[in-house]
Image (cartoon, rainbow, N blue to C red; front, side):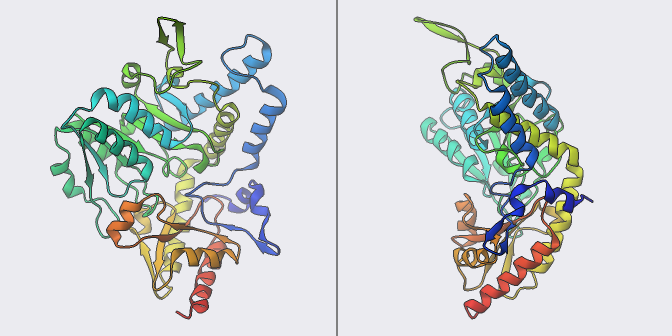
Length: 408
Protein backbone atom coordinates (compact mmCIF):
# COMPACT_ATOMS: atom_id res chain seq x y z
CA UNK A 1 0.00 0.00 0.00
CA UNK A 2 1.21 3.48 -0.84
CA UNK A 3 2.43 5.70 2.00
CA UNK A 4 -0.25 8.35 1.54
CA UNK A 5 1.02 10.56 4.36
CA UNK A 6 4.40 10.80 2.65
CA UNK A 7 2.79 11.34 -0.74
CA UNK A 8 0.62 14.18 0.57
CA UNK A 9 3.75 16.00 1.73
CA UNK A 10 4.93 16.01 -1.89
CA UNK A 11 2.02 18.23 -3.00
CA UNK A 12 2.36 21.86 -1.87
CA UNK A 13 -1.25 22.75 -2.66
CA UNK A 14 -2.54 20.20 -0.16
CA UNK A 15 -1.03 22.34 2.58
CA UNK A 16 -3.15 25.39 1.71
CA UNK A 17 -6.61 26.32 2.93
CA UNK A 18 -9.62 26.36 0.62
CA UNK A 19 -11.07 29.17 2.74
CA UNK A 20 -9.68 30.84 5.88
CA UNK A 21 -9.47 28.12 8.50
CA UNK A 22 -10.87 25.46 6.15
CA UNK A 23 -8.42 22.83 4.86
CA UNK A 24 -8.57 21.89 1.18
CA UNK A 25 -10.04 18.51 0.32
CA UNK A 26 -9.28 18.09 -3.37
CA UNK A 27 -11.55 15.51 -5.01
CA UNK A 28 -11.37 16.62 -8.64
CA UNK A 29 -8.26 14.89 -9.96
CA UNK A 30 -10.19 13.45 -12.92
CA UNK A 31 -10.51 17.01 -14.23
CA UNK A 32 -6.93 18.01 -13.48
CA UNK A 33 -4.57 16.54 -10.92
CA UNK A 34 -2.40 18.50 -8.54
CA UNK A 35 1.37 18.73 -9.04
CA UNK A 36 4.11 17.38 -6.76
CA UNK A 37 6.97 19.62 -5.77
CA UNK A 38 9.44 17.75 -8.00
CA UNK A 39 7.45 18.68 -11.11
CA UNK A 40 7.24 22.33 -10.13
CA UNK A 41 10.95 22.38 -9.31
CA UNK A 42 11.95 20.75 -12.61
CA UNK A 43 10.11 23.37 -14.63
CA UNK A 44 11.51 26.18 -12.47
CA UNK A 45 15.04 24.82 -12.93
CA UNK A 46 14.64 24.75 -16.70
CA UNK A 47 13.64 28.42 -16.81
CA UNK A 48 16.34 29.43 -14.35
CA UNK A 49 19.23 27.38 -15.70
CA UNK A 50 18.72 25.87 -19.15
CA UNK A 51 16.12 27.88 -21.07
CA UNK A 52 16.81 28.02 -24.79
CA UNK A 53 15.01 26.88 -27.90
CA UNK A 54 15.44 23.22 -28.79
CA UNK A 55 16.79 21.46 -31.89
CA UNK A 56 18.00 24.68 -33.50
CA UNK A 57 20.99 25.90 -31.54
CA UNK A 58 24.52 24.48 -31.53
CA UNK A 59 25.51 26.32 -28.36
CA UNK A 60 25.66 24.54 -25.01
CA UNK A 61 22.47 25.98 -23.52
CA UNK A 62 20.36 24.92 -26.48
CA UNK A 63 21.89 21.47 -26.44
CA UNK A 64 21.09 21.15 -22.72
CA UNK A 65 17.47 22.18 -23.35
CA UNK A 66 17.19 19.76 -26.26
CA UNK A 67 18.58 16.92 -24.16
CA UNK A 68 16.07 17.66 -21.40
CA UNK A 69 13.17 17.87 -23.88
CA UNK A 70 14.06 14.68 -25.69
CA UNK A 71 14.87 13.02 -22.38
CA UNK A 72 11.27 13.60 -21.37
CA UNK A 73 10.13 11.85 -24.54
CA UNK A 74 12.35 8.88 -23.71
CA UNK A 75 10.75 8.61 -20.25
CA UNK A 76 7.30 8.51 -21.82
CA UNK A 77 8.41 5.82 -24.27
CA UNK A 78 9.32 3.62 -21.30
CA UNK A 79 6.21 4.58 -19.33
CA UNK A 80 3.81 3.40 -22.05
CA UNK A 81 6.16 0.79 -23.57
CA UNK A 82 6.26 2.34 -27.03
CA UNK A 83 8.64 0.71 -29.47
CA UNK A 84 10.71 3.85 -30.08
CA UNK A 85 10.75 7.64 -29.52
CA UNK A 86 9.52 8.26 -33.08
CA UNK A 87 6.10 6.94 -31.99
CA UNK A 88 5.64 9.53 -29.22
CA UNK A 89 4.35 12.90 -30.39
CA UNK A 90 4.06 15.87 -28.05
CA UNK A 91 0.70 17.64 -28.42
CA UNK A 92 -1.09 20.23 -26.28
CA UNK A 93 -3.45 17.67 -24.71
CA UNK A 94 -5.40 14.51 -25.51
CA UNK A 95 -7.94 16.63 -27.41
CA UNK A 96 -5.26 17.75 -29.86
CA UNK A 97 -4.19 14.14 -30.23
CA UNK A 98 -7.65 13.12 -31.43
CA UNK A 99 -7.86 16.11 -33.73
CA UNK A 100 -4.45 15.32 -35.18
CA UNK A 101 -5.46 11.76 -36.06
CA UNK A 102 -8.87 12.80 -37.39
CA UNK A 103 -7.23 15.47 -39.57
CA UNK A 104 -4.03 13.78 -40.73
CA UNK A 105 -5.14 10.14 -40.89
CA UNK A 106 -8.88 10.65 -41.26
CA UNK A 107 -8.82 13.08 -44.18
CA UNK A 108 -6.62 10.71 -46.15
CA UNK A 109 -8.46 7.50 -45.35
CA UNK A 110 -12.14 8.14 -44.62
CA UNK A 111 -14.37 8.05 -47.69
CA UNK A 112 -18.12 8.58 -48.26
CA UNK A 113 -20.06 5.66 -46.86
CA UNK A 114 -17.34 4.64 -44.39
CA UNK A 115 -18.15 4.30 -40.71
CA UNK A 116 -16.43 5.48 -37.54
CA UNK A 117 -17.27 3.56 -34.38
CA UNK A 118 -17.24 5.21 -30.94
CA UNK A 119 -19.05 4.47 -27.67
CA UNK A 120 -21.82 6.31 -25.87
CA UNK A 121 -19.55 6.98 -22.88
CA UNK A 122 -16.94 9.04 -24.72
CA UNK A 123 -15.59 12.40 -23.65
CA UNK A 124 -16.32 15.17 -26.16
CA UNK A 125 -12.64 15.09 -27.18
CA UNK A 126 -13.26 11.65 -28.66
CA UNK A 127 -16.62 12.60 -30.16
CA UNK A 128 -16.50 16.00 -31.81
CA UNK A 129 -13.40 15.55 -34.05
CA UNK A 130 -14.88 12.38 -35.54
CA UNK A 131 -18.27 13.99 -36.04
CA UNK A 132 -16.58 16.88 -37.85
CA UNK A 133 -14.63 14.45 -40.03
CA UNK A 134 -17.75 12.41 -40.82
CA UNK A 135 -19.66 15.55 -41.83
CA UNK A 136 -16.82 16.60 -44.11
CA UNK A 137 -16.37 13.19 -45.72
CA UNK A 138 -19.94 11.91 -45.90
CA UNK A 139 -19.17 9.12 -43.44
CA UNK A 140 -21.31 7.83 -40.57
CA UNK A 141 -20.55 7.76 -36.86
CA UNK A 142 -22.00 4.87 -34.87
CA UNK A 143 -21.91 4.17 -31.16
CA UNK A 144 -21.55 1.13 -28.92
CA UNK A 145 -24.22 1.51 -26.21
CA UNK A 146 -23.58 1.16 -22.51
CA UNK A 147 -25.64 -0.95 -20.12
CA UNK A 148 -27.51 0.36 -17.06
CA UNK A 149 -24.53 -0.46 -14.83
CA UNK A 150 -22.23 1.77 -16.90
CA UNK A 151 -20.34 -1.01 -18.67
CA UNK A 152 -20.15 -1.41 -22.43
CA UNK A 153 -22.69 -3.62 -24.15
CA UNK A 154 -20.14 -6.06 -25.52
CA UNK A 155 -22.86 -8.14 -27.18
CA UNK A 156 -23.80 -5.17 -29.37
CA UNK A 157 -20.33 -4.72 -30.82
CA UNK A 158 -20.27 -7.46 -33.51
CA UNK A 159 -23.28 -5.97 -35.31
CA UNK A 160 -21.70 -2.49 -35.22
CA UNK A 161 -18.08 -3.39 -35.91
CA UNK A 162 -18.38 -4.38 -39.55
CA UNK A 163 -15.97 -4.08 -42.47
CA UNK A 164 -17.43 -0.63 -43.17
CA UNK A 165 -15.78 0.64 -39.96
CA UNK A 166 -12.38 2.20 -40.63
CA UNK A 167 -11.54 3.19 -37.05
CA UNK A 168 -12.88 2.24 -33.62
CA UNK A 169 -12.00 4.93 -31.08
CA UNK A 170 -12.93 4.34 -27.45
CA UNK A 171 -12.04 5.28 -23.91
CA UNK A 172 -9.95 3.01 -21.71
CA UNK A 173 -11.57 4.47 -18.57
CA UNK A 174 -14.81 6.48 -18.52
CA UNK A 175 -14.46 9.91 -16.97
CA UNK A 176 -18.03 9.70 -15.64
CA UNK A 177 -18.70 6.05 -14.79
CA UNK A 178 -15.09 5.23 -14.06
CA UNK A 179 -15.61 2.04 -16.05
CA UNK A 180 -12.36 0.29 -16.98
CA UNK A 181 -12.95 -1.08 -20.47
CA UNK A 182 -11.28 -4.23 -21.87
CA UNK A 183 -8.86 -2.35 -24.11
CA UNK A 184 -6.91 -5.30 -25.50
CA UNK A 185 -10.11 -7.18 -26.39
CA UNK A 186 -11.65 -4.15 -28.08
CA UNK A 187 -8.49 -3.54 -30.11
CA UNK A 188 -8.48 -7.16 -31.25
CA UNK A 189 -12.12 -6.90 -32.30
CA UNK A 190 -11.32 -3.81 -34.39
CA UNK A 191 -8.37 -5.45 -36.09
CA UNK A 192 -10.40 -8.56 -36.93
CA UNK A 193 -12.54 -6.48 -39.33
CA UNK A 194 -9.61 -4.46 -40.67
CA UNK A 195 -10.31 -1.32 -38.64
CA UNK A 196 -7.77 0.74 -36.74
CA UNK A 197 -8.14 1.19 -32.99
CA UNK A 198 -7.53 4.42 -31.06
CA UNK A 199 -7.64 4.55 -27.28
CA UNK A 200 -8.51 7.54 -25.12
CA UNK A 201 -6.08 7.02 -22.24
CA UNK A 202 -6.65 10.36 -20.51
CA UNK A 203 -8.14 8.62 -17.46
CA UNK A 204 -5.93 5.53 -17.78
CA UNK A 205 -2.39 6.94 -17.94
CA UNK A 206 -2.57 8.53 -14.46
CA UNK A 207 -4.02 5.46 -12.78
CA UNK A 208 -3.18 2.18 -14.52
CA UNK A 209 -0.10 0.48 -15.96
CA UNK A 210 -0.02 1.16 -19.71
CA UNK A 211 1.55 -1.04 -22.38
CA UNK A 212 0.66 0.12 -25.89
CA UNK A 213 2.49 -2.79 -27.50
CA UNK A 214 0.50 -5.27 -25.44
CA UNK A 215 -2.71 -3.38 -26.25
CA UNK A 216 -1.61 -3.38 -29.92
CA UNK A 217 -3.56 -0.13 -30.40
CA UNK A 218 -2.81 1.96 -33.46
CA UNK A 219 -3.11 5.29 -31.65
CA UNK A 220 -3.62 6.49 -28.11
CA UNK A 221 -3.75 9.95 -26.56
CA UNK A 222 -3.49 11.27 -23.02
CA UNK A 223 -2.93 14.56 -21.18
CA UNK A 224 -0.14 15.55 -18.82
CA UNK A 225 -2.32 17.62 -16.50
CA UNK A 226 -4.30 14.60 -15.29
CA UNK A 227 -1.17 12.65 -14.28
CA UNK A 228 0.70 15.05 -11.96
CA UNK A 229 2.18 17.00 -14.87
CA UNK A 230 1.63 20.55 -16.12
CA UNK A 231 -1.14 21.82 -18.35
CA UNK A 232 -0.56 22.58 -22.02
CA UNK A 233 1.06 19.32 -23.05
CA UNK A 234 -0.05 15.80 -23.84
CA UNK A 235 0.98 12.77 -25.82
CA UNK A 236 -0.16 11.11 -29.01
CA UNK A 237 1.21 7.62 -29.53
CA UNK A 238 0.98 6.10 -32.99
CA UNK A 239 2.52 3.11 -34.69
CA UNK A 240 5.44 4.23 -36.84
CA UNK A 241 4.04 2.70 -40.05
CA UNK A 242 0.90 4.82 -39.73
CA UNK A 243 2.63 8.03 -38.67
CA UNK A 244 5.13 7.77 -41.53
CA UNK A 245 2.44 8.01 -44.23
CA UNK A 246 0.26 10.60 -42.50
CA UNK A 247 0.62 14.20 -43.68
CA UNK A 248 1.55 16.86 -41.11
CA UNK A 249 -1.15 18.33 -38.90
CA UNK A 250 0.38 21.82 -38.86
CA UNK A 251 3.03 23.54 -40.93
CA UNK A 252 5.87 25.78 -39.78
CA UNK A 253 9.29 25.60 -38.26
CA UNK A 254 10.94 22.40 -37.00
CA UNK A 255 8.51 20.09 -38.83
CA UNK A 256 10.29 20.59 -42.15
CA UNK A 257 13.40 19.12 -43.73
CA UNK A 258 13.67 21.61 -46.60
CA UNK A 259 11.66 24.63 -47.71
CA UNK A 260 11.80 26.39 -51.06
CA UNK A 261 9.43 28.81 -52.71
CA UNK A 262 8.23 25.86 -54.79
CA UNK A 263 7.36 23.61 -51.85
CA UNK A 264 8.53 21.80 -48.73
CA UNK A 265 9.55 18.36 -47.52
CA UNK A 266 8.88 17.07 -44.02
CA UNK A 267 11.10 16.29 -41.08
CA UNK A 268 11.49 12.81 -39.63
CA UNK A 269 9.24 11.44 -36.92
CA UNK A 270 8.34 12.54 -34.34
CA UNK A 271 9.16 16.13 -35.27
CA UNK A 272 7.01 16.06 -38.43
CA UNK A 273 4.03 16.59 -36.13
CA UNK A 274 5.62 19.14 -33.76
CA UNK A 275 5.52 22.43 -35.63
CA UNK A 276 7.00 25.55 -34.06
CA UNK A 277 8.61 26.10 -30.70
CA UNK A 278 7.29 23.32 -28.45
CA UNK A 279 6.17 23.43 -24.84
CA UNK A 280 9.68 22.74 -23.56
CA UNK A 281 9.21 23.37 -19.85
CA UNK A 282 5.93 21.48 -19.92
CA UNK A 283 7.56 18.46 -21.57
CA UNK A 284 10.24 18.48 -18.89
CA UNK A 285 7.53 18.71 -16.24
CA UNK A 286 5.67 15.77 -17.79
CA UNK A 287 8.87 13.72 -17.90
CA UNK A 288 9.38 14.42 -14.20
CA UNK A 289 5.76 13.49 -13.45
CA UNK A 290 6.30 10.19 -15.26
CA UNK A 291 9.38 9.59 -13.11
CA UNK A 292 7.35 10.37 -9.99
CA UNK A 293 4.57 7.94 -10.88
CA UNK A 294 7.06 5.30 -11.98
CA UNK A 295 8.77 5.63 -8.62
CA UNK A 296 5.49 4.94 -6.87
CA UNK A 297 4.73 2.00 -9.17
CA UNK A 298 1.63 2.05 -11.35
CA UNK A 299 0.45 -1.31 -9.99
CA UNK A 300 0.58 0.18 -6.51
CA UNK A 301 -1.20 3.34 -7.70
CA UNK A 302 -4.00 1.25 -9.17
CA UNK A 303 -4.27 -0.93 -6.07
CA UNK A 304 -4.55 2.07 -3.78
CA UNK A 305 -7.20 3.69 -5.96
CA UNK A 306 -9.25 0.50 -5.88
CA UNK A 307 -9.00 0.56 -2.09
CA UNK A 308 -10.03 4.20 -1.68
CA UNK A 309 -12.75 3.92 -4.35
CA UNK A 310 -14.25 0.85 -2.66
CA UNK A 311 -14.28 2.75 0.62
CA UNK A 312 -15.88 5.80 -1.01
CA UNK A 313 -18.58 3.88 -2.88
CA UNK A 314 -19.60 2.06 0.27
CA UNK A 315 -19.74 5.29 2.26
CA UNK A 316 -21.64 7.23 -0.41
CA UNK A 317 -24.16 4.45 -0.93
CA UNK A 318 -25.36 4.91 2.66
CA UNK A 319 -26.64 8.44 1.93
CA UNK A 320 -30.40 8.35 1.38
CA UNK A 321 -31.43 9.72 -1.99
CA UNK A 322 -27.94 9.48 -3.49
CA UNK A 323 -27.61 7.46 -6.69
CA UNK A 324 -24.17 6.37 -7.85
CA UNK A 325 -23.48 6.17 -11.57
CA UNK A 326 -21.40 3.33 -12.95
CA UNK A 327 -20.24 -0.15 -12.01
CA UNK A 328 -18.80 -1.66 -8.84
CA UNK A 329 -15.39 -0.60 -7.57
CA UNK A 330 -13.94 -3.80 -9.01
CA UNK A 331 -14.73 -2.56 -12.53
CA UNK A 332 -13.91 1.13 -12.19
CA UNK A 333 -11.17 3.65 -11.63
CA UNK A 334 -11.09 6.35 -8.96
CA UNK A 335 -14.28 8.16 -9.97
CA UNK A 336 -17.64 8.43 -8.19
CA UNK A 337 -20.25 10.36 -10.14
CA UNK A 338 -23.65 10.66 -8.49
CA UNK A 339 -26.95 12.47 -8.29
CA UNK A 340 -29.00 13.37 -5.22
CA UNK A 341 -32.77 13.33 -5.38
CA UNK A 342 -34.25 16.82 -5.66
CA UNK A 343 -30.85 18.57 -5.75
CA UNK A 344 -28.99 20.15 -8.64
CA UNK A 345 -25.31 19.09 -8.88
CA UNK A 346 -24.23 22.74 -9.03
CA UNK A 347 -25.92 23.40 -5.67
CA UNK A 348 -24.23 20.32 -4.21
CA UNK A 349 -20.80 21.41 -5.38
CA UNK A 350 -21.27 24.98 -4.16
CA UNK A 351 -22.26 23.93 -0.67
CA UNK A 352 -19.56 21.29 -0.16
CA UNK A 353 -17.04 23.87 -1.32
CA UNK A 354 -17.86 25.83 1.83
CA UNK A 355 -16.43 22.84 3.70
CA UNK A 356 -13.30 23.07 1.56
CA UNK A 357 -14.25 20.13 -0.64
CA UNK A 358 -13.60 20.46 -4.37
CA UNK A 359 -15.77 18.23 -6.56
CA UNK A 360 -16.96 18.59 -10.14
CA UNK A 361 -20.52 19.37 -11.18
CA UNK A 362 -21.90 19.38 -14.71
CA UNK A 363 -21.90 17.07 -17.71
CA UNK A 364 -18.11 16.45 -17.50
CA UNK A 365 -17.75 16.89 -21.29
CA UNK A 366 -19.98 13.84 -21.75
CA UNK A 367 -23.36 15.30 -22.68
CA UNK A 368 -24.59 12.28 -24.71
CA UNK A 369 -23.94 9.99 -21.75
CA UNK A 370 -26.00 12.17 -19.42
CA UNK A 371 -28.74 12.54 -22.03
CA UNK A 372 -29.09 8.78 -22.25
CA UNK A 373 -29.36 8.61 -18.45
CA UNK A 374 -32.13 11.21 -18.59
CA UNK A 375 -30.22 13.79 -16.56
CA UNK A 376 -28.57 17.08 -17.44
CA UNK A 377 -25.67 16.84 -15.03
CA UNK A 378 -24.11 14.93 -12.17
CA UNK A 379 -21.75 15.61 -9.30
CA UNK A 380 -18.40 13.84 -9.42
CA UNK A 381 -15.81 13.12 -6.77
CA UNK A 382 -12.55 11.69 -8.07
CA UNK A 383 -9.73 10.20 -6.06
CA UNK A 384 -5.99 9.93 -6.49
CA UNK A 385 -2.81 8.84 -4.75
CA UNK A 386 -3.17 11.49 -2.03
CA UNK A 387 -6.84 10.91 -1.16
CA UNK A 388 -7.47 9.65 2.37
CA UNK A 389 -10.40 7.87 3.99
CA UNK A 390 -10.76 10.90 6.27
CA UNK A 391 -11.33 13.09 3.22
CA UNK A 392 -14.01 10.71 1.98
CA UNK A 393 -15.65 10.88 5.40
CA UNK A 394 -15.64 14.68 5.19
CA UNK A 395 -17.37 14.47 1.82
CA UNK A 396 -20.07 12.21 3.24
CA UNK A 397 -20.63 14.54 6.19
CA UNK A 398 -20.80 17.54 3.87
CA UNK A 399 -23.31 15.83 1.55
CA UNK A 400 -25.52 15.07 4.53
CA UNK A 401 -25.28 18.75 5.44
CA UNK A 402 -26.42 19.61 1.91
CA UNK A 403 -29.55 17.56 2.50
CA UNK A 404 -30.24 19.47 5.71
CA UNK A 405 -29.75 22.83 4.01
CA UNK A 406 -32.35 21.92 1.40
CA UNK A 407 -34.48 20.00 3.93
CA UNK A 408 -34.32 16.87 1.86
